[in-house]
Image (cartoon, rainbow, N blue to C red):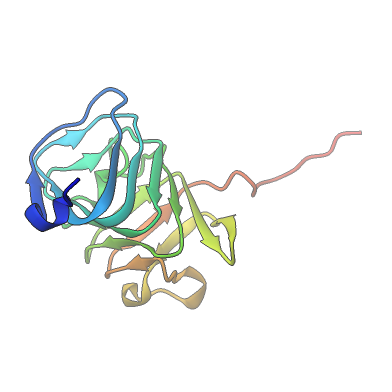
Amino acid sequence: MKSLGHYWSDMLIPLRFTGAASLVLDAPVTLSLTNHPSTTTGTLEVRQGTVKLLSGAGWTAVTNVVVAGGTLAVGPSVGATAFGPEQGKSDAVMRVAPGGVVEIAEGETAYVRNLIVTENGKERYKNVGVYGGVDAGLDAAHTLSCLAGKGRLHVQHNPFKGTMILLY
């Protein structure tokens, strides 16, 4: 089997994914999605290489985003609908493992329902809030090494935080 990396080092794909189709990139290539939002409920997973969401692209109905390695890049004018159908709305659970990077373009805010980051071998849910990489200009508590670029990631929910009411 030949490596796609040698022949297809940078692919620009103006396609729309629908239904329950998943995309898994596990090759040292760059795959750029552009011009069409994908309404698939399937998983978007990057194991190695780079997936770029560019102008007009987004994975708008996704519930599972996995960055196990490589880079998932959110380009200019894409943040609001990168992982949801409209600004501020996302059902995506994003998991980022060591070696995985989510890069968000300057001026963009991408939204996810949950963010789970593997730290010291354990998956940890991040609290509700806005996070970024070292270039995003946020305080240390909201700066994550798995995020890059000057953009931000807005986490909308943490299933383990909230108010508990005990009734006797």
